[in-house]
Image (tube, rainbow over all chains, first blue to last red; front, top):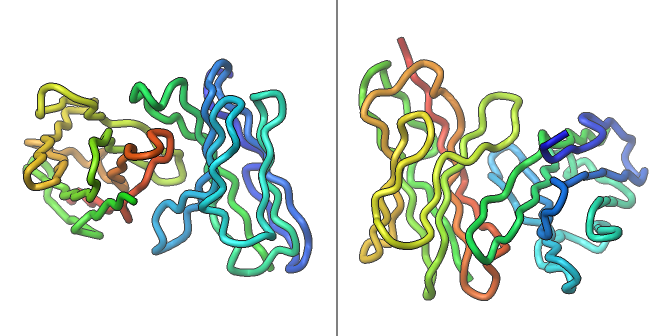
Length: 115
Length: 114
């Protein structure tokens, strides 16, 4: 496909379990972002990967959250010991060259529900 | 650090009326500015962006925005809205030490009534 692909689209998990969310960016895009969208919280930045540079992890809310990007392509966001407040839509986006102002293309998101 | 403020959380409007969605940003350096739209149960889609040059930017679906440096604003406008414009609109900024990090406003829900 031509767009950013995220899987799963929906995930229901029990409190305390670990979850992995996957993002396939657009081919050739060097930048990849994760955002979290909660009701009343807008879009919260989580982490940003740009090429081979160290990722900007400044938005990760706690050490239970981590992300990696393998081979400069696919990314996985991992949430350990999930809590109910982690329930949200997790959005992934990719961009060709953000320094030049190219826009970020967003996936459809993964809706995470922690019960 | 930069921040983006969308001044209205909800804007109701009648079909064919004009609309303005307000956005202010704060940054001590130059920024790129974006407006995204999110239709119900869908991802975000770019409406328009400002990088430099002309302060009036035209986007898709008849939307336009004007960059005002002195007022640090980037308001979105449409002269005549349609029912199909009902969606949530997000203003975003990138710049400073990291042009890659998009900072979003809280969003404005535009509801167009018949």
